[in-house]
Length: 212
Image 1 (cartoon, rainbow, N blue to C red):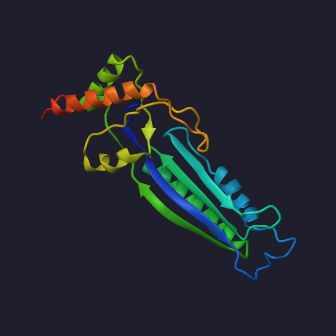
Image 2: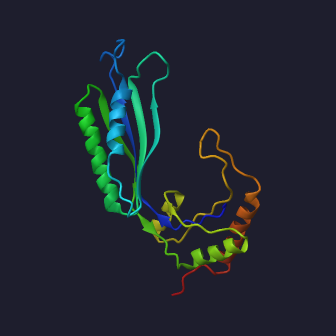
Image 3: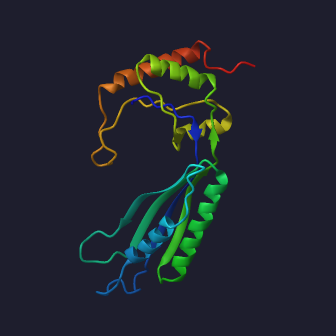
């Protein structure tokens, strides 16, 4: 459904792991294994990290890049990852384990193996009982849509830590989760915009504020 209010902000760690062989370390040799071999070792170890079902937790491997041709082993490789959890301690534990993976693989190769922590945040949540969530539910139900609540790692994170209530509304549906073929449906946009306009009016009318 195009209407998806989101009220839970996940704890998050985003990072980038880079492997690089310096020129002269043998990467011109025919039997040079390349950076992909070391990156595969890192991938295998990260995928072996225990991930609890409760609290909701995930490790996402978002992007892997290496090489540019068929017949040359790459001297560099890069992995972008994201660890999410409702529990900050779980995110910190996963971070420590990934740090150990990088150190372990780095100690066993002549390549440079580095990790860059790009972003992090602590978990928080907006209660379902908050007026803005309840009004949003009424708006969505009135449009004949179904309300779904799920954890978010999106832009809502910039306002919840400041005790500013907020939620995310989906405007439409997508055809494919594949980035290269992803498209948006046009027809659901009309109801998607209607829910935004209606909710904004409810906010202006003072219906979404907690009473002191």
